[in-house]
Image (cartoon, rainbow, N blue to C red; front, side, top):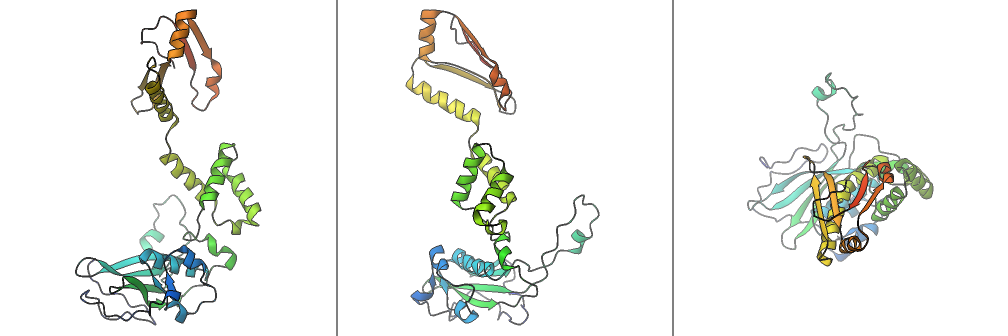
Amino acid sequence: MGDNSLPNSGTNSYEDDYEGTNDDDAGCNFENETSVDSVADLENINFKEISIEEVMRFHFLDREVAFMFYNWYGCFHGFAARKSRVIRNIKGEVVQQIFLCHREGVREEKYINSTSRKREHKPLSRCGCQARVVVHIDVSCERWYIKLFDDEHNHSFVEQKFERMLPAHRKMSEYDKYQMNAMRKAGIGTSRIHGYCASQAGGYENVGYNRRDMYNEQFKRSRCSISDAEQAVDFLKDMSSRDDMMFWRHKVNVDGSLRHLFWCDGVSRTDYSVFGDVLAFDATYKKIKYNTPFSYENTEFTGEKNGQ
């Protein structure tokens, strides 16, 4: 990480450079009443009325829980948190980390004054805020505690009704995702789904996410989910394992997309032996999103016929 010295933070300054050779810092008392190990523990804390003295008494299972604690604190006070640098000991183990206000830092002028951009710059949000939290590990019990809590901000806070709309606080629950996907399958557009969720929650500010979050979730789902072509091929593979007379072949384009698919199960081959040639063409398949015709041909079976 290079130089392990910590920057000055205005009214509260960090102490000497951390060498990582000892951990004699006296943290909190590690009482069970102030132990935070999960989201359930966070839900029992009154972040709106909590004092800094009370904040300093809490200790955490790990750094992730400590960050959730500060982010929840920020959510109830009109700002959001983000992670910053870590400090390691001589063994390479992380023993300290800094969490910052989301408005810490400033954007460089070369990006602000750039004339090569085609899109307008987003509104500036960073204003050099020095509010931060430093969490440290007590190696004797492997609990993380707050070593420094600087809560002096140099900016105004978001109104209470918009606190949960900050990027760090926006989140879709599993039920929200399930409801959105179910409505999408029914042909309902994303904007209408978001409007429905807002009407159920009593306003857009109470939804907890915006339309962009919904589009992002749909994009992630589409990237992770298996394609229709892959599902069809897997289905035919499964049929082949259960039907000894099953025959199927497929061809793909240069880009790997499915081009031709042919299959003939045992029942079809038996029907041919009884009824002879069959030719069927379903024009409705030209109306699906793939715009692909579907033909079925059953003549003397040689294993070379293909459907499209």
